[in-house]
Image 1 (tube, one colour):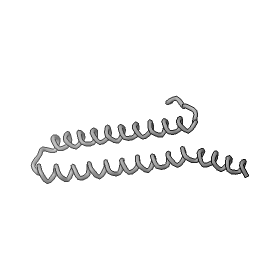
Image 2 (spheres, helix red, strand yellow):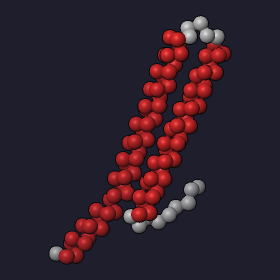
Image 3 (tube, helix red, strand yellow):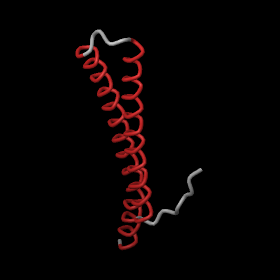
Image 4 (cartoon, helix red, strand yellow):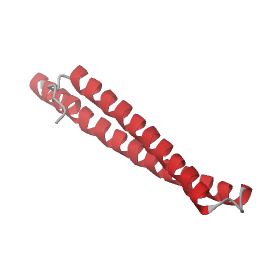
Length: 99
């Protein structure tokens, strides 16, 4: 009975990185979707607030918004990747170098 409990505990611990990875993936996907929705809302706000803005100026504003959004999503992704890596190391996973 003791061996069974130990085996179940090891399996439960081994499943934690997978569960955490799935949670992180869902969080990243949600963050990306939220970022896309934010840019869409921003585009509408620019159109409403500045209907007569020249197309090249509008394009510049929108490209800046996309660039900012891209940096925010990348920052979120990097943070969550580090969280998963740290959790994996805490649970005894081996370190992997970034390729």
